[in-house]
Image (tube, rainbow, N blue to C red; front, side):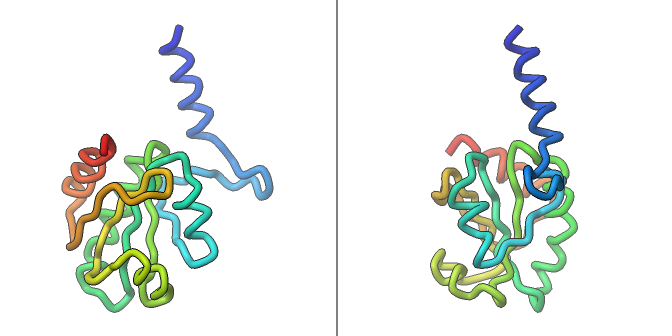
Amino acid sequence: MPHDQSRAARAARDHATCGSCKAPLFAGHPIALDGASFERHVGSSDLPVAVDFWAPWCGPCRAMAPAWEQAAARLTPQVRLAKLDTEAEPGIAQRFGIRSIPTIVLFRNGREVARQSGALSLPQILRWIEGNLGA
């Protein structure tokens, strides 16, 4: 019976929608964060959140973007993937000591639990996130 309950809970979470706008909460795509949404999505989320700190002019960041998109489709809703443009939000990047991009930071309950700098392939992203979920 617990297995059925977890399956039902998973199905409900997979199809959850916003109470205000009715948009899917877990669309399978990275969330674009800005100064206003960072705290809401990272600081108060019960789910682990992996943030790709990037910039539009960064070649390795752009090269990693399709793999990040694919990882979001595979890991959502267990983990939320997000992107933060460090050029548009330098204060947040500075707050977390982002010195090179791309840098991925995994947050749990608003606290950093792991960090990885440099572009990764899809298998590397999946392995890194899954390997750090127990941290």
